[in-house]
Image (cartoon, rainbow, N blue to C red):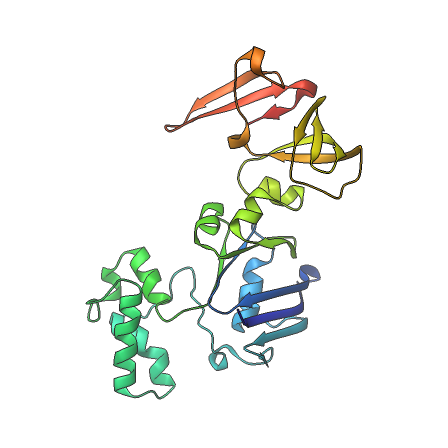
Length: 280
C-alpha cells in the first residue's frame, strides 16, 4: 500500500506552549486512520496542519510525494470535513458535491457522473435535489465526505475509533503514544497511558519470571510477552473481560466483591484483591 500523506518532524507551539513535538505520521492510500486522544493532545492541530489551516513551526507535510507545507488550503488536493459538516445551506445536495469540481473547471458530464457515483457510494442515491437541511446529521456527514477515499479522522470517542479505523494513532501531550490496528491498540498497549485510555483496564504490578510467564501476587500465569528478562518488575494489563469469576475453591487469586452494578447485558463488578488493588 503506497503512502499518500507523510508528516515529517512536525512541531507546533502556541504562546510558548508546545502542542506537537517532532511528530512523524504516515497515512497509506485508501486507509481510514483515526487520531485518538484526550482534549489538548494535539490531534486537531495535526489535522489543521494537514489541511493547511495551521502552519507548523518546523517539519514538512508531504502529500502524494510532493511537499505541500507552504500551500494554502485551496491549493491542496484535500477535503476537510469540519465537525459541523460545512455544507452550503443554499445549495442542493448535488450542488454541494459539485462545488469543488466546478471550481476546478470540470465538465458538466464529468460532474454529473461523479455526483451519481458519490451518492451511490454513501447510500444516498436519489437525494440529488434535496435540501441539505432536510437531512439527518449522519446523512449530512456522509454528503460532506462523499468524494473521500483516504480518511484521517479525529475523535476522542474510543468506540468510534475501534469500530471504524484501519489504523488508530493514540496521542497525548503532543506525542504519538502508539500507532497500530484497533486489535493491537486494545490487546497489546505499549504503555500505561494507552492501556488506561483505551477501554477499561486493570493495571497490576507483577514479576516477569521469564519469557511468557508472569507472576501476579504469588501465582504464575502464561502470557505472550518476551524480552523483559528474568524476575523483573513489570506492570500487567488485564482487561475486565479476561477475568473469570469462579467458586472460591477453584480460584487462583482471591478477593472480595465491593461493588456490583447491573448494566443490562452484563454486571460491572469491582473486586478488591491482595494489596488493596481494585479489579474491574
